[in-house]
Amino acid sequence: MPKAKVLKVDPGAPDKNAVLFAAELLKNGGLVAFPTETVYGIGANLSNKKSIERLYRIKKRPKSKPFTIHIASTRTIKKTGARLSPFAKALIKKFWPGPLTIILPAKKGKLAFRMPRNEVAKMLIAQSRVPVAAPSANISGKSPARTAGEILKSLGNHVDLIIDGGRAEIGEESTIVDTTGSSYKIVRKGAIPAEEIERIWEEAI
Image (cartoon, rainbow, N blue to C red; front, side, top):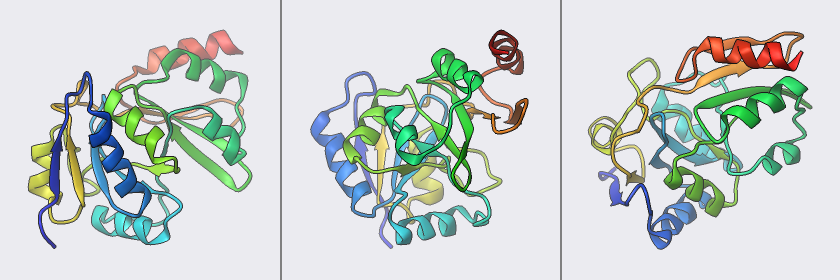
């Protein structure tokens, strides 16, 4: 497979036509690496079975580990049937858009959501008009990519397009919080300190 095309955009004012091109590619089954404020992710159309299988394959990730759904609007959560507790709503109000991944109870088990604040990411997700699975742009167990160049070097032969929006602002993965139980659980420590999550919990209960 040839090396992925690299599409350079201004992270502060991304070209809408360039991002629309990437969104159409993603929507139609392509794998698109893109920047978020934490690290770079690889986007795939969650509704496209072949794309998701390909994403699992290149990530070398077990299929028992589902992907986070990246969203541009909370309306997407409602469409999935996932439920928001008062604590989950408080987390969303405080940290979205931003480096928080939240796990919610759904009709069939659990679903994880994140709303990035990076302008390129928000525009790509919104314009794709499909549910976007977007794990970090790396092979499972390896360090996540913080630049487009790192992705080109490690996964350039496996993705279709890399949106180069400069170095990731934070450079650390999102904090993952599971809100499906009677309390909460931090599944992965990340950009939001545990103390801040605890403070929101104490205010919400």
